[in-house]
Image: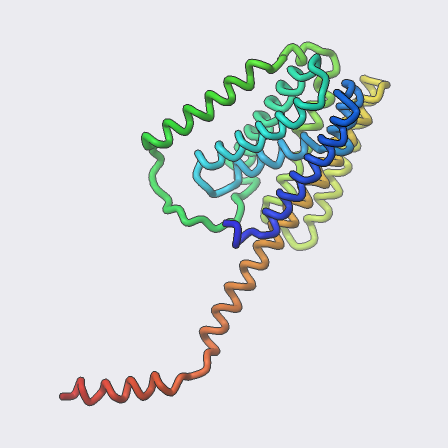
Length: 282
């Protein structure tokens, strides 16, 4: 998988390096305040964008369901741990609740789009053989461990955040934007229409900002709009990197096939064949 998707793995490593650099830089100044932390996620860290990518990949990837759940748990837990380290303790429960709600809603939305046929699976190569839906004993143990990790994380979630008046502004932008973007990049479109749909996604983010501004005159709509733009940019970059990897794989396959068809004739093959003919006649 690493050889077939080198650019995608480099993109993941670059994201992780940026995350660590921002986390370590913020930690030097002590725990950041709530408003500073929110701006930190929106403008720099891009935590909602990475959560959205995890949810989209978990639905559209062709790898085994347990492998997808394990990667989402590992990556999501790592993001929460790094963010937990720098945010004030009073807002850590809200952080866990928002991330869990966003991940769950984006997952459900992508599953719905997939069932309706509005999006398609990723064109990635797997070595697994398609089998009928069944659970092995190893898979049952694996799911038990994953459920235990999520149950432990949810103990720290503060879902009272949904009782706040303006909580829907942040969560709405965090969920609706990625569900709009998947219709742009993960659906077969007519030539020349993808860019148009991408512009519609930016306009949709602007509409959400206008609606949020009606209900709140504070900084929250601006933060949510910046987070929406960050999600569009990050998901676009992720799709572009995966597309470049797919093109590289296609070119390698075409080149290998061409070399086989245009291979220079080896005289030794003819001599060996001519030697075998008398033996067969005898």
